[in-house]
Structures are given as structure tokens and as C-alpha cells.
Length: 124
Ligand code: 5GP
Image 1 (cartoon, rainbow, N blue to C red):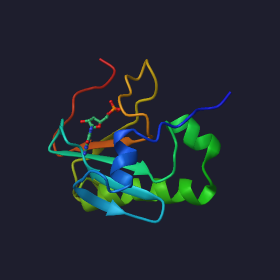
Image 2 (image 1 turned 60 degrees about the vertical axis):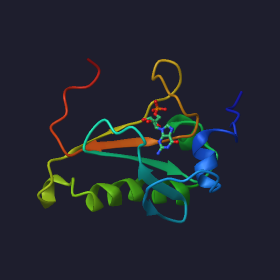
Image 3 (image 1 turned 90 degrees about the horizontal axis):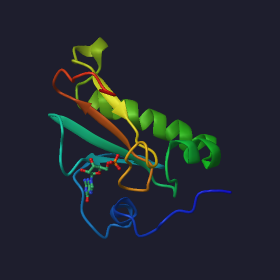
Image 4 (image 1 turned 180 degrees about the horizontal axis):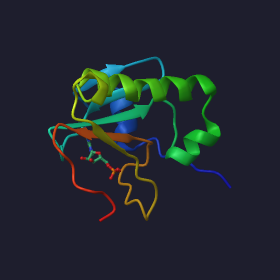
């Protein structure tokens, strides 16, 4: 079995330019934009441009170039948003929900980057 990707999901529509987003960073294989309903002073979503449903799908199906680009894009957003602890930032949290247990709403891989305040413990 394998995942099937729903091309009508909201992040696919953002990638096609059909609906706007507040862009933070764009690279060859990745796009980062502000979450529409931020849960922290910084709340950015980073997505690969390719059609991947979630993190395990991406790890299985994406090229090495896409995986490197995506990982570096996440780091660049942390830097650009001033979150890196070694550069005076307060730190951050990365979250990627998958499937039913993760309560994933949008079926296109996204990592949430949250920061700008001290975050509570997760998995409460
Ligand atoms: P999930 O629950 O799938 O991990 O998170 C989906 C996230 O996407 C939510 O935090 C939600 O606020 C955000 N979101 C949903 N629709 C849009 C949209 O149209 N634009 C942006 N920028 N974020 C969205």
C-alpha cells in the first residue's frame, strides 16, 4: 500500500498560488509561511513543494535533495525568526502531526515551528 495525495488540500492550493499566504521563506523544494491561526508569537508552517502526505511518506518517497532542502529550510526559518538558542533566541518547538492520532487536519506534510514565548510541555 502507499499514500494517495489529495491535490485539493489547502496547502496544495497555496503552492499553486490559488490562495494567498504570508510567506517567510521559499527554496527550491520548500515553502514556509505564517499559520493563519497562530498559537504562539511565532507560528510558521514549513512544507515541501512535493506531494507528500506526512513525515513518514516524505521519508520514504522524497529524494535526498528534497530532504536536505526541507531540513535546511526549517533551520533557516528558526534563524530568520530569531529563535536559535545559540544566537540569543529563546528556542522553539517543531511539531508534525500525522494521521488520526496526530489529529492532522491538512493532508500535506507540514512542520509547525512555534516560539516567541516559553511553551508548555507537550503531550499533556
Ligand atoms: P495540523 O492540525 O494539520 O497539524 O495543522 C494545520 C494547520 O494549518 C493549523 O495550525 C491551521 O491553523 C493551519 N491552516 C489551515 N488552513 C490554513 C490556511 O489557509 N492558511 C494558513 N496559513 N494556515 C492554515
